[in-house]
Amino acid sequence: MSAAKFGDEDLELMPQITQVSDLEKLKQILRNIVVANSITELQNIL
Image (cartoon, rainbow, N blue to C red; front, top):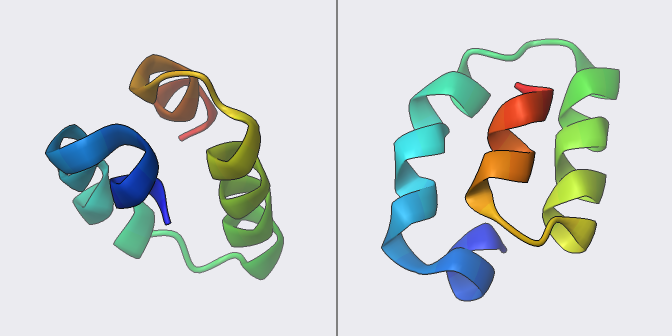
């Protein structure tokens, strides 16, 4: 989903996201992908 929004630069976040095992944290990340205006905003929640 974020690749369509931010292009290839979001792929840098994948290693961090794949390390998250808490389901609630993953849901939070998904919600933030939808509303974030930049990669920096997504990085701040990781």
